[in-house]
Length: 343
Image 1 (cartoon, helix red, strand yellow):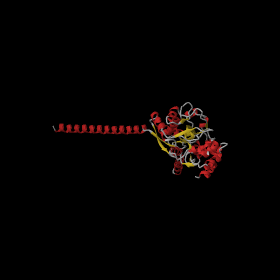
Image 2: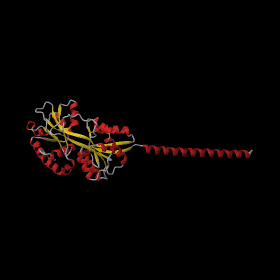
Image 3: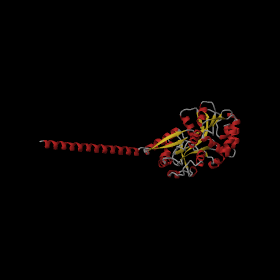
Image 4: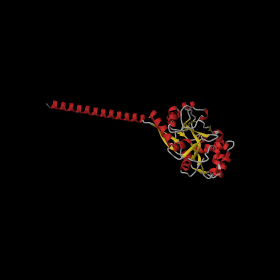
């Protein structure tokens, strides 16, 4: 009897040992599966790229929303600021470890030429860029869209302005506004065109100043000032002016002679971006038809031929600065401008 009890106890101990071992094995297996699941979750988490831009918020929102639909595995974190503030951010980054963006998308090619000359851009040509006009492409960046600088004037104004020279017309003395080239890239582009154009040059700005022309901060400030009746007319961006007009603002838009000034907005990759493949995917999307259509939805003009954009008159003439030449002359032209209007 005692032997039987002893054997039963031994058997019970063995059973308990087996059960404990099984539980331990199950626990280890469960722990392993949990770790594997966690690793799988981490591996499938979206990659986040950082975009530095001076492009308008509605355009950025439209493009990033369309991109997210097609590429949910890549998220775009956006830092948006006017050109001057964006330059300051990049300068700060350079002093504290390097540019933190993966992609740069700015309002004018002159700014991008500056970044490229500092070695901040990666040499890369997106597949979609090959469909763009040659004048909107370099080995480091490509034009994602176009801005047109035009005249905006108060509704009912007489005489009606029809040319850039009307900014110096005595009929509008003391009531003309222009944006600051030191703040707005589009205004710097205008300086590039007028500064080297026969019949204009810096003398154009001298005449404008002598006519009581006022420098304001941004193209949007010009629109606001004209709408409020503070100014009679001024220089601004076409899509913003048209949007104000459609919202009922008491303004009109003129596509002036010798032409509205076209400024392309370049996009490019940073030389030391952390997520190169994802950044390339984003740039290629922006320059592709779906990306260009997302830009067009916000009233801006895409750079890809065949994608309808801004509502401009069929008779409108378009002109552009000689960007490479202007890049070489920027310092002297801007210094000359500042002597006229101040810094």
